[in-house]
Image (cartoon, rainbow, N blue to C red):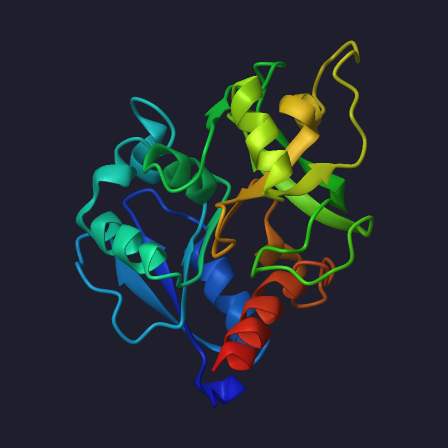
Length: 235
């Protein structure tokens, strides 16, 4: 049995990553262990879960997440995920996971062509993914901060994802017809987070680490706590 204090997260850092410290702070605040993993490393041995944080890896040059997806550590992430181990990508981390082929879809530029940064209401759609055990229909208040946050897949892929329970979170309020079109729910079907079919890999545009320690909120803590609970139950 894994003790809570022994549960160890690996937080991957690329050149340009700026939210790694926030993720480590949130995880340690919840009583779990967290250590940084440099993008040039090639092993994830000793980690119970892996988080890819946000922060414009490689300056989002070429395409958000495209260069980072080819870093040496991503081969280890792919092997880690194929073993069924948990991987979470937040915002730019989500973009990296789609570029690496670990999640379906792609992230397009916001329809407003503006960088959006604000708190939004998020609705839980499915809790079969390992990173969340909150009842569907529950609404969470989480911050977003991105310029390329419009999730897109073709209709056939969308139907497959819906059938497999891969759509985890959606924006609760969709207002793509607004004059300024600044609402991040311009994603296809207002999608804010998706998982792979196995449920061990999750990509989400909202930032759970920013609302974990109680200063701005606590809704984000559920994601980190849920994966620890899941792994302990499996163990």
